[in-house]
Length: 452
Image 1: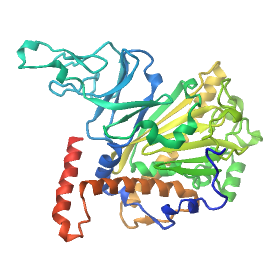
Image 2 (image 1 turned 120 degrees about the vertical axis):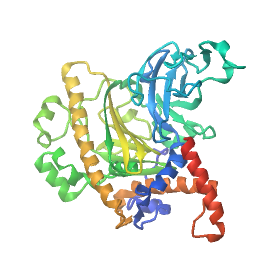
Image 3 (image 1 turned 90 degrees about the horizontal axis):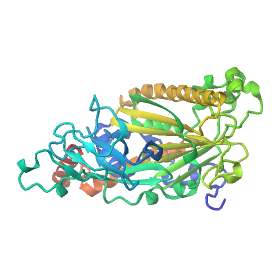
Image 4 (image 1 turned 30 degrees about the vertical axis):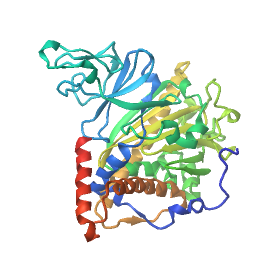
């Protein structure tokens, strides 16, 4: 309990006075120049989760990841090498720049197993450690030293089975970046939950707006009424929905909530199919038979208030990785990959302990389908939100106490961008004495965007 003490009772926002209580400026969600700055200041400098180690089950296993959030056309290879080390490289042949690993369509992500990577253009070959090992007609080249032409590496580190990459060679180590939340989550049995269900969608809204939707439950009784039976929905609408706990540590945050009791105390609260399959929006009701998920076994970061009615915790690892842990013993991840100021790729993956029978498998599938509907309700609303914010008619919006993590997210994004602008010398254009320096710095940023 001492590791994650609960803040004093009362308003949550007052515990982080640096966030203020004034309306929040949402220019960061609609300004194309701000998006370009975020690309350089955030997505090229922060640790980004790209998956889990289970996707690389043996030596030679690999997958590719398209990274438009970092720069147009940027593609990455993640591979388990011959020493079982997980590595990351730019997906680019050193000969003429062809994309190295792809199948029929170069924009599609692929996965597989191989002993080496071979470029399909001129057959240059690279080891799983990125070394250039073969050049077709090598004697035709001039003073070519293969040691100088290996794949370009990207920093890659693993925490609790989650693979992260960072395009900044000077970034702090991953464990330091993830901070206290990561330390407090260590030991949770993520590795036991290997049955997955995934979905992906392009959403016509700024990436931060979708994170906004998942860091407050103020909207839940209104937007998600159909997720509960009529009587329960009316009760939630009348009394609202309050979370159990909020916390902020550096750029990261979390929200803890009730719900997900297994099984519900009143079966009339749920739909008939949920009663049959013992599953629903909160996932399967029956805890799997594994260690580490019972209430007295949970790591200290989970259910920090130790509330008896705890149902789930959502950890927001800045900038775009959500790790959501459910009381019945499963978890899911969200990723938000911006492709422009007004659109992003949303990805969700649900993780369960492998089913032992047909009913358990159907219980998992029901949870996955129900959650998909839940998430897409938010996605549809957010597109409507973005269109109106983008008009610029109103730029600042009031947020309630339950929306504290929204304040934190937007302030954090602004802080990263402002630090980057300061580093580049991009000053306020209204300061006429520095206009020349500001213009030069802006060109530097545009150059960074091109290089990305």
